Length: 125
Image (cartoon, rainbow, N blue to C red):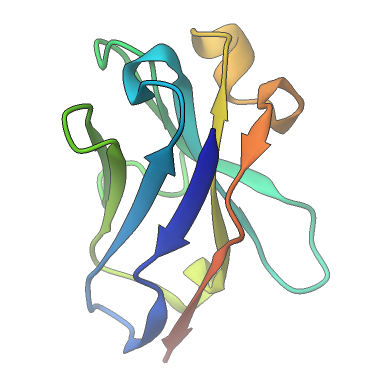
């Protein structure tokens, strides 16, 4: 599967953005999906994930209550609605797809097989 992330940009603290991840190739519904981010000088970290069926969703504590992950299998697209953005949310955001569902797998970037190219989100204070 090939993934294409988009929707990043420069916003002010408190604003909202919606990221999209479009997939091509094998049916989207086959994959466990996730969003990760990498700030300058830091390791790539987990943000949010959704199981292949959409029945389970996971969030990092740092974004819980502010970000919402969703997927539209008919459109082969995953979204990350980001609200109440903070300067510390500044990072390159990556979408990822893998074969392993569940909280024991999807929070770890090592369990994802495919990655998008990333989209930059910059939040100014």
